Length: 492
Image 1 (cartoon, rainbow, N blue to C red):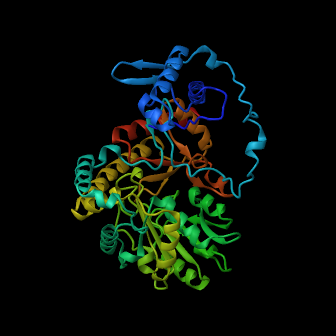
Image 2 (cartoon, rainbow, N blue to C red):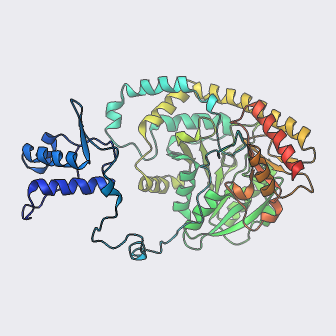
C-alpha cells in the first residue's frame, strides 16, 4: 500500500517531523480510517526514499501520541479511538468549505434534474409486506445454476478479462437474443441490429443521445415512466403528453406536426398496465410513417402474459424501419444483472453503435458470458416458464384478495406483467392518505405520485390510484397485505 504523503527536502523541519505531521493530517482528515493498516517501515521508507530508521522513529512518535498501534507479527494500524485533541477543530489555514465560493465556481449546471427515476427504493423500517414496484422474486433467482455457470466462465476468462469488449456486446449473446426474439416476439433481425445496454435506463439514454436535443418534440404516454421523461428533459426536449386510454396511447390525439420520437410501452403500459391491441398498433405505425417519427418500443413485461397469446411486437409489424425495440433481463433474472438490449433499424446500426461506444466501452464481460451460457443450455427458457407459473399464482391470489376486501375497486393490467394498477373504490380517500394508514400497519402501498410514474398535468385523474408490485411476494403475504389495505381503507 502506498500513502499520498511527501516530504520537502528544503524544509527546516526534520524528515521525521514532516512524516509525523503528514500522517497525522492524513488520519485526522479521514484518509486513513480508524483500524486501517499502514505500510511497513520498509515499504514506506522505499516509497519516500528515506531510511527505514527514520520511518521507524516516526511510527514510534505516532504510537506515543495515540495515533497508531502495533500488533506483534501482524502489523501497524491506525488507533480505533483517536486522541482527544483530534476532536478539537484545527486551523488548516484554508477558507471554510461550507461557503458558496467553492460550490459556485462551475454552477449552474446545464441540467440539475427533477429527480431520480425512483426505482431504487429500500423497504421502509417496520414494513413487513411491501407492494413496491420493480422487484423480482429473490427466492426464484437461479442461484445454483448461476454459480455453476460463473465458475465455468471463469475457467477461460484470462484473455477476455484482459481486453476491451465490443461496445455492442459479445457476439454469441447478441445472436442468442435474435434466436429468442423470432418465436417469442415475431421479430426477424440480425445480431448486428442488437446492442447490449445496462438495463432499460441506458437503452432509453441511447435513444435520447440519438434523437433528442434542445426543443426536440418527444411524444410520451401520460402517465408514463418518469425515468424516461426526466431523461429526455435533460437533453432539452419538449415533451408532448398524450393520454392513455383502455387501449394504450390515444393515437387519435397524436400531434399533426412532425415529431422526432414517440415513447410507448405497448405490452403492459406503465403504469396503467393496459395492453395495446393490434388495431391500435397498426394505427400508431401508420401515424409514425406519415409523421417521420421513430417509435421507442419499451417491451418490458412481454415475457409474462397470463391470459391469451402475446401480441406481435411493434417492431415485427414495422415495414418502414421506424421502430427501436428495447427489452431487458431485469424482469426475468433480476434488476441487479443490469443487462438489456436494444434492436435498432438497419439504417441506425452505425450511428447507434457509435453513440453506444461513446457511452461506455461495453458491458462487463463475465455477466454477458454467463447469460449467454444460461440461454444456450436452455436454462433461461425453463426459468422464465417457471416464473410465469409462479407469478400467475401470485396474480390470482392478489385478484381474489382484492375482490374479497375491496369489492368496488378497479384493477387494470392484471392479464400480464409484474404489477397492477389499482383504482380505489368511489368515495375512498386519496391514495396518499391510504398509504399513510397502511404504513402504520406495516404494509407498503404506493400512489402514483410516490412511484416511478410521471403524471404530467393528469394527476387529478389518478388521485385514487395505487401502483402495486406483487411478484416478489408470497401468496400468503399478498393476502395479508390486502387484508390490511381493506382495514386501512375502512379506517380512513
